[in-house]
Image 1 (cartoon, helix red, strand yellow):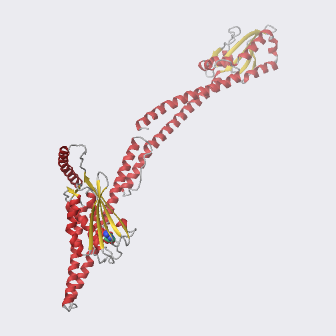
Image 2 (tube, helix red, strand yellow; image 1 turned 60 degrees about the vertical axis):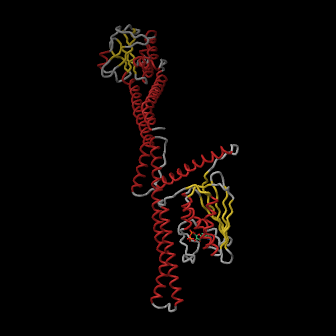
Image 3 (cartoon, protein in one colour; image 1 turned 90 degrees about the vertical axis):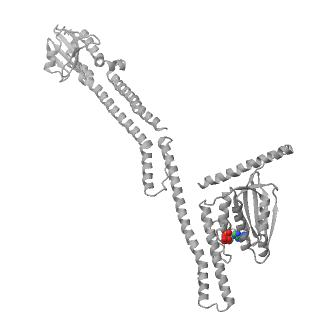
Length: 532
Ligand code: ADP
């Protein structure tokens, strides 16, 4: 639920729940109170009527006993001279906050309670002044209000008698007051509980998530980016938590990238210094040998000088590769993507290096399985760098016991890609090493002082170049059998429909060629965009 909805619900809860509960409690308290009154006082009136008119209620509670007194006074007044009978009548009204009083010729002959004060005796209506109907009575106000029911009669000796059933109204009303107190207490409890519930609910849904967010922010401030913040509810704060979590993950990613970069930089420096130190030590050693006259024959001197030259060349190659890798890694190499005829490109490249390879006792075969017209999008110079890297690896890691063979195949993959396979029959690469050969500075030789003089950068550079072409490069190899490097490159798709007229097809081809430049320049633009 949204925060707005939550506030609206909280508002309604604070208003509606107390209202409903107070109504229910009031009804319940009055109902039980009057039910018990009805039972104890034998009132058969409607509860609502009793609540709305408490005097009527007071009146009703002594109705039966008063009727009995009245009947007795009229029919058998002599019984009212009988103390025991009078006591029994009094006992009947005693539990109803009432008592019986008898007066004879103005003198009080019986009083069922101490509540009959001289003041009250004074205020009692005189004989014949007032005769109470069934539900009537005289109400005496003051500090202790009384309801007096009076019946006048004549004793057997004709003396004037009055029987009073007096009800202490304040005591009757005490029960009602108790009910009222219960209701007030209930209202306070209900309001407190509702308030506590709403406060807790709002705390859980608003303050608690905010506190969690605050904690995470503080921990992030201290550099701990591992505190995940999960949204608890689908509300505005939940959305904030989601955004916060995205920001945290993004920052964590950046930090990890940064750390990884830092680690790689350190590793790079260590690798570079190692790789430079090895030939440098050799150069220094041989130069010292020359200076100290250890190489005392012209043959030895030539050997020393040749080694110095080879090591210096290795260093130069390493520095060149390093600078190339640095450029390529920072996207500082300006690619010049063009549409190249795949077959033509490989035929030319192979013609260039065949002689070189033959001199190194390597055979090279080319098997084109793609259409003669197949065009690809590539930078010829950078693609050549990749092919040369792979070919030089085939030479470097050849199996000395057999004649080296390199096979190059170009095949169609789908409407978007062509595949180039460069297979050799060299030493091959172990299963464990194979996944790492495209990592920079990775060499399968345990000893880094490999006689091959590899820098471990060739395939890393190749991978980056191919990926920048929008292609893919991977390798398959078997130890002792050979290695195949696969390259996927993007095709320039020519759409010539066979059903078209030859001229139309020619025109279409022309158009496609024009469009092709568009594709190529688009590809170049995309690259430039990526570099920026
Ligand atoms: P290097 O300059 O050392 O050749 P590369 O990045 O070109 O670096 O190759 C990484 C490693 O992969 C090499 O050191 C070598 O161990 C292994 N490798 C690459 N190509 C071949 C291959 N054709 N045959 C056997 N091993 C290879």
